[in-house]
Structure formats: structure tokens, C-alpha cells
Length: 233
Image (cartoon, rainbow, N blue to C red; front, side, top):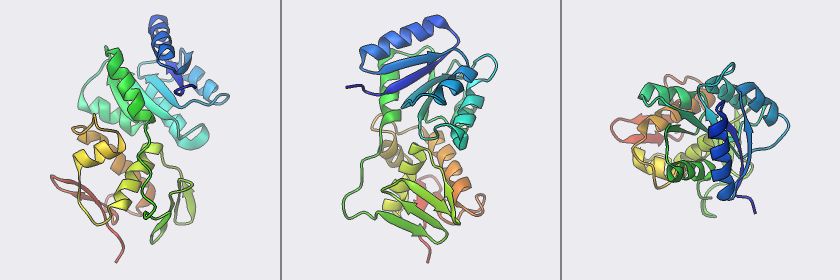
């Protein structure tokens, strides 16, 4: 049984060959593309669970391709890991802001890449039977069974990680949740220090569910601690 279908997008043939061999040996089905345009075309015809997307591609670069994928015209629920040679925090934030679930710096080891893939494909554990199946925040309706969110009467697409993050905050409403706890609950036990991930994902969630993202009513920052979901009074 396949561990998942992965699309490798890189303009270097040797990297595509190595990744195909490595990933296939670890139980994944693998396809590849040389450019962002070719990747978008494949996504329109085939279903993938995850995309390994190089940032520096000729033509449509990885950031542009990720934004197009996340726009909802293709498959917004696919996991995306960006691959790049740049390691500055601003580059990580730019990749995450473009829709990536994670970010890996070249050169990387095989165990590191496989761990990142498992984390990106990971779905947060389903809450207990006592957790709500639906939840309302005044003008926001969340259906945890169908993973649908409706904001002011309009269906709103969340990425898998955005949804899992929102669900964890809902299940711990009115409590300040530390950064490390949120990261390990949503991404996995190997995470905990990647505070910039949460900053980007919470900002994206605010844009999608808050009427005034710059002055959030629901997704509130707890300085030096983490984040809290405020329930309406």
C-alpha cells in the first residue's frame, strides 16, 4: 500500500532522479516536473498528497506556483514543502506565506527530508467524542466532520494545517496555548522552536475568519506565550 503520492518539482534532473529513487524506496508513489508550469498542469490531471517544490524554478517560480495552488483553482488541500538554498528567516516566512506547510534548506539529509514529509502529511489527532462536531464563532461556522468553514455565509478554504491549527485552538478555547504545544500538536513532536510558522499561519487564519484581521476578535496573541481563541461573550 502506497504511503502517499508525491510530486517532485525541480529543474535539476539529478535531484529529481535521487528523490524519485529515495522516495520510492520508502513506499511513496512519485512523479516529477521540471517547471512550475508543468507542475500546475499535472495537478490539473492527477491527485497528489504532497508536493516537494523548489523555490528557484525557471519561469513560474515555486512561490508563484504555491500561491496558484492555494488559490483554490487546483487542489488547495495538498501538502507543500518548499526546497531552497536560502536559510534566512524572511525567506522561510515568504515561503510559508505563499502557502507552504514546511520549508527545507538544501543540502538536506534523507532522514530529515523523510521526517519533514511525514510531518507535512500528518493530520492532527481527531478529538475525543466529547469534542464538538460543529462550532460557531458568531459569523463563523466550523464543521469538523466535513472540514468546512463558512465565514459570513461564504465557504472559506483552509489548508490542512490551517484547519488543524484552528481545531486545536477551538478545542482549547479561552486558554493561552504555548507556541511549542501548538507546533507539536499540529506539525508533530519534532517541532517546537519554529515560532515563525505559527506567526504566518495565524495571520493567514485571521485574514480568512476575522472581519478585521489587524484587530482580531477571535485569534488573539498572548505575548511571550502563544495564542488563544476567544469565545464570543
